[in-house]
Length: 338
Image (cartoon, rainbow, N blue to C red; front, side, top):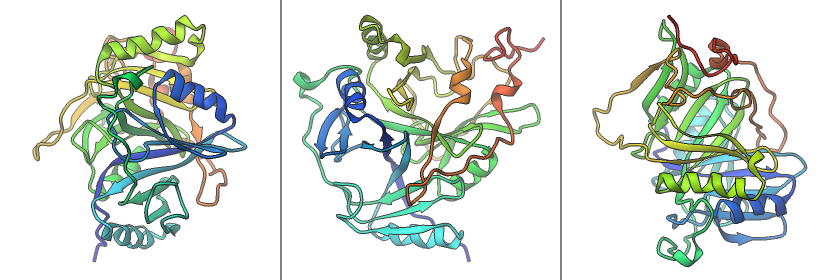
């Protein structure tokens, strides 16, 4: 008999290890406009303007930059027991984290190392924060509204797809080869394009976290501000419009190299008969709807992942590598076939 999975509501927060907390604060708070909900000697707890939960990003000082864990909120306290049984049944490492012993502001939780090698937390209870959506006097930078998604690098995209399907996630879009081999997938629980997406490549690694803002001009404004301060080197890719998701975007790298996407204008996926839209890997518009090339660092660089005890997870090479099929003049991004 199959063990039922926990009822995941949405992607909830990411916790990153950073080597210079002051530099991280400059980037995420001063430049991007996240709000500090709580801080102690070595940790910042941040949230977006629309968010009422305690945090959607935690920055913890550490000896090396890495992803500490990803977290999903579940519908009920009983889902923690389901998470423990589900992942225990898969033979995965599972750890109960009682309230007050884990991440500040989070209630009882279960942390696991999932079949893809990522440390993932499931929780239900979390502290609340002040309503900031109309505190226009506090809005600045990118005016980030909320956490939207995680994007993870994994060497086996079909295995990632099957694992998240087993957790009850839907699939909004894919990138596939001519024989329907799977190069990338976008999967959701909340009613948007994705809570998690998979980028093919060596892994487990964190490709990026996606932060939503309300309007495309806020994406442009973010790039303008970095440029005006002579900090344009933090802009990695864009601004542009994705083919997958239709979102307007810019990718930035923080002082430790963690990647963030500022993202707006995707679409609703809540209908029960929502169909997966499938892109061919040779379609130039899939990663950028205007056909702009994707730079090599975007495919090749990502943040390493820590296990339950804070040790670096070993990295495996990819089964399929989307960047390897690129045939443009620069070797990347342009894939048009005659």
